[in-house]
Amino acid sequence: MATPLPVRVRIRMYQVGFGDCFLMTLEYDAAVRGRAERHLLFDLGSTSGPRSGPVKMGDVAKLIAEHTNGKLDAVVVTHRHRDHLLGFGDAVGAEILRKLAPKLVLRPWTEDPALPTDATSPTDGAMAASRRFVAQLAAAQSAVERIAAQPVPDRGALHALRAAALEELPNQAAVAALDQLAEGGRGRYLHAGKSLRLASVVPGLRITVLGPPTVEQYPRVANQVSRDPEYWMLRLQRSLAEAAPSDQVPPQAGEVEPGQVRWLVDHLAKHRTHSVARLVRALDDAMNNTSLILLLEVGELTMLFTGDAQIENWQYTLDKLDKDRDLRTKLATVDLYKVGHHGSRNATPRTLHALWKQRPADAPPMTALMSTRSGFHGKTPQTAVPRETLVNALKDVATLHSTDDLAKGTAYLEFVADTTGGPFQPVDE
Image 1 (spheres, rainbow, N blue to C red):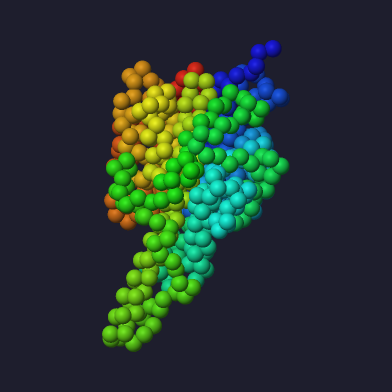
Image 2 (cartoon, rainbow, N blue to C red):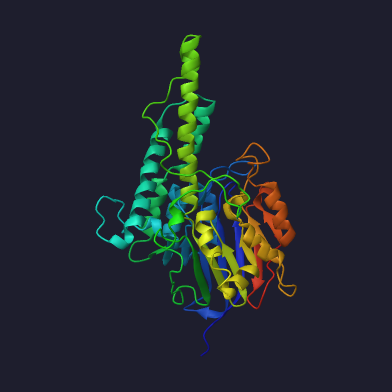
């Protein structure tokens, strides 16, 4: 008897506001061990609902259960930011995901609980740098936890700082739920080049892990750069260690008498706030650079899911393109691109965009999917997410669909393509 083959790929992009949640379904020409479908969930998070109103992660999880017929085969969590994993810590969402019983939970290598974070005396010299990096992330998150726990005014710089810090919290309920799903050998902790054997779980799916690299593979992944021409963003923060917050919130100018003392307190407060803000922004960059970058192939279809990966993560792959012609061709002819970092200017390399500009004329049109909410991050055209210049550049090379354009009450967008080749086409409700 011939082995059943996937004949169609279906992608659902759920409305979660500023966050990511995607479901990939492979449909087969015959039942495989009693089922003619396989399902992979990519992230389940949000930090702000859509412009039309709030979103309940439990309701999104219920839709996922409905669309998977009660059985999920794999969960992919690109990294541990709240806008990618909040729903796993939601009481309703966590219970639904537990019942869906995924056979695999895929996360970045930095999430591996077997990788110690104590860098004082590593037992394995080959992993020393990676352990130090994970320890730095843990220390920075502890500092951010202190910021988030402090009482602050209802407005102003400190209020904005605390709001930013809240987005960087590890979200322990979600992490604990994912750790539980990964028990019994179901967890896989991925780095660039790591092989995955998925035939027994999702037949016909091939995954190439492009990122993140380990520190041993690419030391720059543990650092930040101040400027890099590869990205739409021209400035990135340099280091996790640039600033360390105090245990106390500095007094506000309004709490002291007018005069020179008040002036001094005000300026000291601003200085400390800006220093701590650098730490928060640097942690944001570092966490984004632990994002999984996955190239997925089913039949003749190729899909690129990038999380929020930034330059220190992407560059490891970009440096290979001149010599690896096969990888270069696959990236140039991607059928579906999950837009990195919600349309931020710091997550779609110019090199990648240049490949798409030179896309072969006989290649099917590319589809780009962007889960985002405008007006939530960035107050100027230069800092806004999504970035208008990037959006226009993507429209020049792909058919772009955004959750930010959905009518009120629309819970998801759905796209389908035959595995004999794209393009992905939207499915009418």
